[in-house]
Image (cartoon, rainbow, N blue to C red; front, side, top):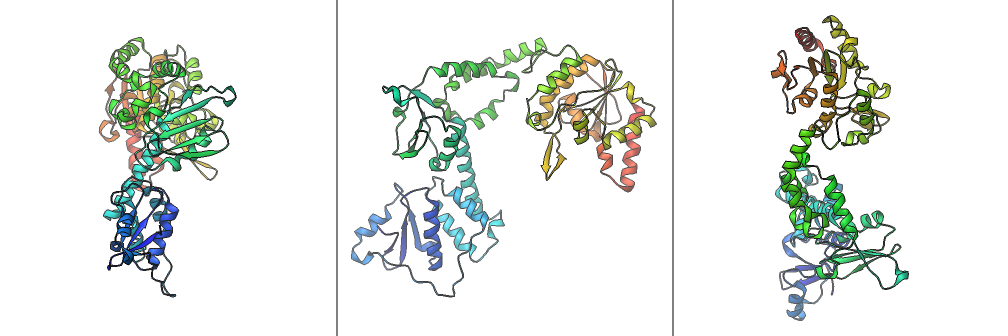
Length: 478
């Protein structure tokens, strides 16, 4: 069957794509149609199993609808234009299961010839629709990578070795697009992924495709899943349970294929009691609280509870007398603090030292630390640029600061900035509303909130002078 076929006297064209995810063929056909100046309303697209068999209809219409070549474009016709953004978007959106995706993408390509910057218009309904399709495809790809569970299949042939089989039900045509990930991730395994849209088989050297499968073709389980369920139950942390977020990231429709999912209802039901027991014991997922500041420092250096700890950095522990009356808490170590291994030794530390001296506070008598113990940064060339920690990262590190306060037992805590205040109060804090007044804490100590010295470094002229004055007033009041 030819790709283009004339339907009735209106000179409409039907384009059949033998594979629903063949972007290269779609692009070839779409380019030819644009070159032939065929508008979108005269093109009908179809795929295998799609609604309406356009080719069968054309064939039944008789000899008048025999194959027709596209008009030859004039020599001076400009080449077909497509921005990189459109190509990348179309490559993803074409994998969607929406039967109207081919026509939508062709309309966008047709319009691009007259409006080259059209893809930058976020309010355009067709651009937004294509972005929605691409987003759904990316999400489906992510879900497949996250929720495929391989099960060992027993073989009668000893020389064949172990073979693992997984069942997955993708919403879109993502099987081929995801094949490379599984080949790289499980290169040394012999495996098959069965889906209603087709199958993948990897023997350690060659990847082959197969026809669609049924759920019954996949194994029901294997002995290793008991070990996995035991591990999953042991790492379940009730203090971090957020059912809405969990169901959003792991929709219930995937649970039937995941061995650990059978434990989830029971774990959720017992979460509140387990969390209460953890609080009563004074612990968390980190374990019992450290008994000394030295033990706390050792735990900090080993901590990888949030992404910051996984960067190329080191934990910067607090510094000062172990029985200090005043504890000063900043946001996080900076580049220089990370290199030296001490808090407040960079430019912000110098500003702090100057104001402490003016307020009559001896730095050596105070305990200085940070809400987040590792330096969060992003690389730009060879430089490490500071990035503010996220609320979740501050909350994760809060356990370490609470342990530090329990050991030092300061009578007064000075929070420098909103991040430090959040780590002490467990909520978002407005420095402008809270500064200049004492805030009682649960352990009987007193909290004062002010700006971080790095904020003063970012100001100039009268604004800097005014904020320097307010910062000095806060320290004197404390």
